[in-house]
Image (cartoon, rainbow, N blue to C red):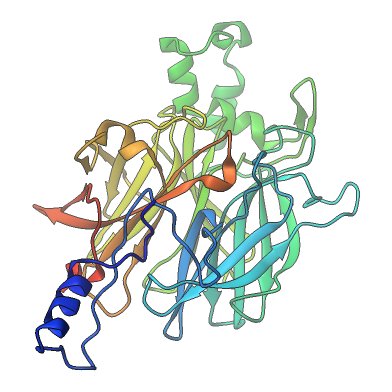
Length: 394
């Protein structure tokens, strides 16, 4: 099995040159390959176990946070792992940044569902803030909560603050009291059947937004007030404001919610993106004055075709574009699912599309897809490459 850190063409050329007496200068180091879908060893020689994650750059070092997956279950029995690197190819295992706990009934009790961790740095508080999707132990995916934790250092340990649903009792920008009353007046029988024209119209008008604004029961579980939050990411804009982007409304609609200045809570301002579009796995970045977001459809652990949206403002309006992927199995996002868009430090318009190849029967063997994003007529393109190096951005 090839590894991510395999000897590439540059290294082979260097060896041949050495044999012929034409050695390269000692200061010239060959770039290492990134080979998507292969085993990626860390500094211990073990496959990196940081799934559904994201990468944060801080003071010249990249920190990769992700879900620690066991061999037979996707539930959280360890927590969120952290790895560090100065070059995005050599990764040092830094340990468990956020640990699950053994206290019965605790929000992050061992065996809960803890997914899609992302970390951002708050310069105001000098804290590192971790956001993630959380499901309480033994309740499936009914709770649809966010979780938030903080640390004084990028590697942790992170201290769990709380979990909950988003913006309880509040409605998205542009939704008036009159709109809420009109949604509440929709006859229940007319929307009992999903995927009908009447149902689509009700979802677009905010049927599930109004439902989730207040505490209620789904018939099996008591559910707190607030909007559902599943697959998620966080984003810090150029003006220093931070946002929480997540799949909501039973995964039917994406929400973008503004965070408080300390990045640990929501301000109450949020918008909806692609109502009833059935999107999850959001990954967002900004190029110039345009915001781009790559998502996936909702097909469980199975891959599907990537979607892409753009907007002139984080608040919208968001416009959908064709699938940005090209190459073998592009219609299935190369058998992966988006998780994060990584800006490469010190390089203009250099972004890496990060995705996971899920293996639910053997979760710890899930693989990673990292591919450079190019632009055609200012529109992002993600093209498959068996292997590539960061020299691509030169």
